[in-house]
Length: 146
Image (cartoon, rainbow, N blue to C red; front, side, top):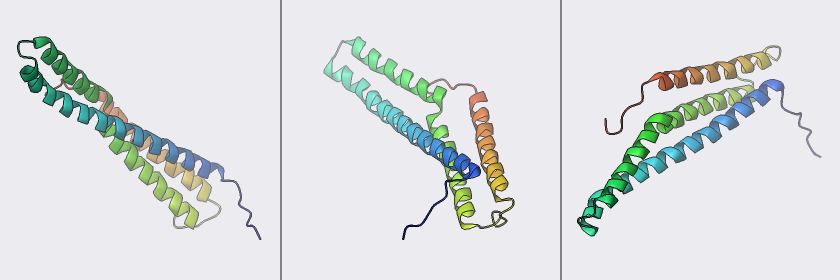
């Protein structure tokens, strides 16, 4: 005997969509952050090495040094680390609400109000994350190396 499952409610679709977006965005931000950090370490290490391998050739060291400045500048502009942390926090908050909703835990134990309560909770989480983003975006861009 197969069990019939109802399609997700409007509020659960909102929650599922929000969870999926924050999950994808957090993964992307984490990858970009880690890639930038690794590149800065590797390229920075190549600057003094290039002076030994190519003595008298300042072009290689200057190019590598410029690459470090560009990568560091991109980190400051795009805030990948901050995004990763914010998106992960929001994703986990949405997941906590989805779990409480699915199990009928408070405040989702009243079938008359549970849909509205879930939609409100997801909206609040998204608004809080947006407020955090505005705070990060309003910060002046740091110069690399400062």
